[in-house]
Amino acid sequence: MRYTVTLAETGETYPCGETENLLEGMLRLGKKGIPVGCRGGGCGVCKIEVVSGNITTKVMSRDHVSEEDQAAGRVLACRAFPASDITLRVIGLMKKNVCRTKTQALAA
Amino acid sequence: MALRGVLRLGEVAIRVLDMAEARQHYGDRMGLHEVMEDAKGQVYYKAWDEHDHHSIVLRQTDRAGMDYFAFKVFDDATLDSLEKRIKAFGLAVEHIDAGVYPKSGRRIQCVLPSGHTMQLYAHKEQIGNSLGYRNPGTTPDEGVIRGFRINRLDHALLGGINIDENAKFFTEVLDFNMSEKLIDHDSGATLVVFLSCSIKPHDIAFVLQPEANKFHHVSFLLESAHDVIKAADMIGKYRIPVDVGPNRHGITRGATIYYYDPSGNRNEVFAEGYIYYPDTPTIVWDTSELGNAVFAQDNVVRASFLEVLT
Ligand code: FES
Ligand SMILES: [Fe+2]
Image (cartoon, rainbow over all chains, first blue to last red; front, side, top):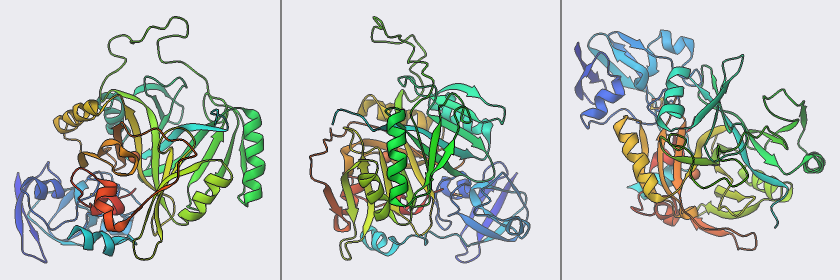
């Protein structure tokens, strides 16, 4: 099955297969919106909140997703698979690092 | 320096979310040799050209990252003298009896100012590199060098707090030298320290993070930069997530590729670089040349380098 994923903030949409995680689906089409890190459920930068729709998940790091998070649909996009059309909000950000402003300025 | 004291990074214990996936990655893809599974289901690996029983330990749990790292030291007397010096520096030292860690002699353990757990040991069973020690020849049997053709575990980069304090500990207590460091151009604050106990540009490095005890990457030595490209071919073929494709670090001058294991822990395979002697002045890079310092072939700063850790 293929479903439509919508990013709530930007309105960006992309199709995503049920065996393809929400981050992969975005990346495969060269789209942007969800921050991309380790793609293995370990680093937490791709954290999203499912606003509507159903997902299935694979094991992900408890450092970044508590049981309450998971129950509320706050999960890691690289470990979540669509089981219906999905609308999501990005909540993970690469913002933890003390060097961020510097690296961003230089990267720009 | 006749190489005595702390010898090398001998063991890194990595947490994984799914052991079956991790085994496919570290064993089948990277080509490390699985030497043991213990009663708790932890899996042990060595690279072909290491002589000690293992250098990587995988433990399945619900978080990614690193449990501890361990340096091998020259002998028992070194272990005793370092214990005194570690205590004098002000860190608590824990004793671990021989055999608690498989194939391993007694260990001492402390928690670094950065929050990482470090162990030191003088003995681990040696099983060799398959060639033997008398008239060994040069080339192992077909299939011993395989996968990414990794020769050995080389170094780790860890993220944490108090990295200046860590550098002081490694240089003053463990007799490491600071080969290079990266500082903030404006404030002069230390961002990354590169520490050597050998003739390698680094044996361990620490990157400043707002959180203690984070894992940036573990790195494995390949024979050549050409082998880095061949590893990259396999990484692409098997859809292993890449952080930074083949490039060269300014710092250490290693030819590198960064990729992630299936639990999101960053790995590196690299080759080349320079020979370091402890009388070489510390090389200093600052953030006005951050791109060149970190990835010198395209000089592009990647936010992920400083912000994606497990
Ligand atoms: S990208 Fe690291 S947890 Fe998803
Ligand atoms: Fe490295």
